[in-house]
Length: 191
Image (tube, rainbow, N blue to C red; front, side, top):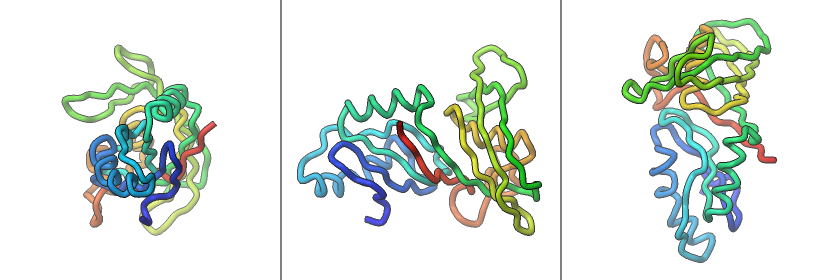
């Protein structure tokens, strides 16, 4: 399967497509194939991290609780380094920058709201980004989040006038002609 990037007895890394749910769809889509590769029934199959529905990219699937706990702990402690690529609206100068905000995720609206100072129920969010290319209407950005919060990248880039192409929830002019938004989880590095 072209979507299986890495595979061993404890976990695998697959490519999640836009529109797939990390928690329910990804394990279901790959379970039969992974059981054939492992030559055994998988009793435990979970994703220790999530990608938003419209986001594509690398996704880990754990086959046992020990591996799941290892990845979950390291994600929570920000010991796993993630890199994303994004196409954002507008032309931006080539630059490196660190963004720091306080995020509150509103579950009713399914949207993150950012503040410059700490507010009730907020969590500090930090990411580094680098503008690495420009086209005629869009810029190409590499993003390295230092924290992992729901919609963090989408909200922080939008707050800084870099709305992700197709991300109408955070201010894109229109949805993209292909499914999802132009945010891709490029790589994951573990300790």
